Structures are given as structure tokens and as C-alpha cells.
Length: 271
Image 1 (cartoon, rainbow, N blue to C red):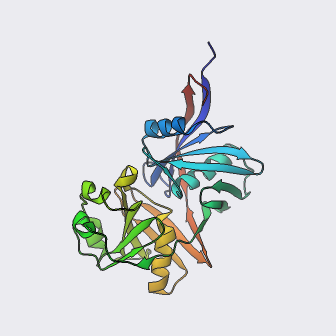
Image 2: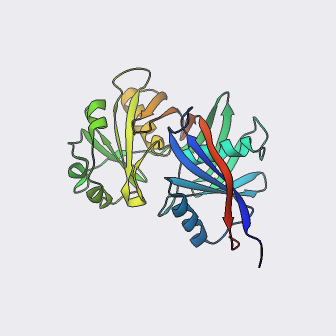
Image 3: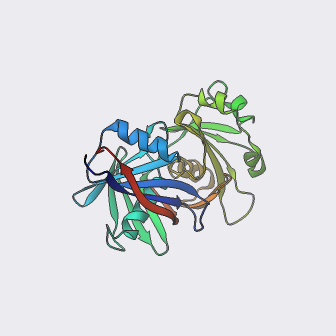
């Protein structure tokens, strides 16, 4: 009988500078790609909003993200967590930019002092009619509704209204999209806007801090505030801070991360 394989595994809280806040991600380091069934099973076992899997490929790392139920095309917090782990484990030299090959193209992570800055694609949103049941599922009357490549974006009247939303997740899961971003102007400095993100159709009722949603939020608030740099707060129960900077068709998302646990994933069969 062959010995169980032991794979490095890390639990990281992203977009926060303190433990048990921000958005938790699992990061698993591999030397080759296993079959998809194994990846799905590990992500379901981790039961976090995303599990990131990394395989070295020359000077880059191939990166894939899985929720407990589906593989996704773009994820900010698990990318930030992956970069944090690669530097922390000495897989990449301190100060060196990391390139990730993903389903959304080449993404980059660069250390900026105490923060990590992600280079992501801008996701343009356009006004759109609300899909049937959206307002009812959120329990609010939207101020405006837009749609990007992945998500619907709903603006509400105030931060207080945004924080009070208690969605009907069964109804919200029936809306045809990856997720629903809800946003409002911040009620106080230092934040320009606040948001929440709901994705029950992807197995995540409410995501604590969603980097990829800020690729759309950046476009939305740039058009309304005529600014290219923002401080944003995602007002989930855990909460998280994202710095946002637009440059042409790219969005630079800044944040910090905290290592919560590290160990090994033990498997009796080769992945």
C-alpha cells in the first residue's frame, strides 16, 4: 500500500489585517493538476467561499478557484491569499511580482509595502432592467440596476438600507447570474462606497469580501463620482477593506492578509 500523499494547505483571511475577519480562503499547493472531481471534493470539504489550487508553470503559477459547489472564472480574495502564501513560503522571492495564469487571463500580484495589489480586468457594467424577482428577493426597491459579465449590480438609497438587507436566498438563487452586488455611497469617511455580495446560485449565500465584484464596482462608481481611486468597505458580518484604482481597462485591488492555519491535506489516493 502506498503512503498517503501530503499536500501543503493554508487557511488565509484576505482583505483584512486581523484574524477572523475579511474573507477566508484555502490555498492548496500542487505539483500537477489532478482530475476535476478531486478538486471539487476538496473545495466542498474545505467549505469556504473559495479554495485556490496552484500549480507552478515556468515563471508563472496556474491558478484555479472553486466554491463548495462550482469552479469560478475570477476570484479576488483567493488570489490575494495565494500570493500571500507564495511569498510567505518562499516560493517567490520577497518583492517579486507574481503572475497567475487563470480562466480570466494573466493576473498579477505585487507587494506594495504592507499591502498586496492585484492587477485585474475592469468589468464594465451597463444599466439593465431588473430580472424578475430580484427586488422581491432582496426585499428592497432598487435605485438603479446594472449588469456586468458575471453579476447584477443593484444600487440602493443608503448605507443603512444596504446593511439592513436580509435576502430570500431561495428566490435569489433563481436569478440567472453568478451573483448580485448591492452598493451605496458610504455614510462616512474614509470610504467612498460600501457593498455586499450575494451568490446563492454559486453555493455562497453572502460572500464576506469579494475582490472580483470590485472590478464592476470600480466602473460603476467611476462613472458616478468621476474618480479613479477609491476606498471601499464590504459590509458583511466579517467585513473587509479594499482599495481600488482604475487604469484604462484594468483595476488594481489592494488589501492585506493574515495566515490563520497551515498544515497538510492528506489523501490516500494520488490527486
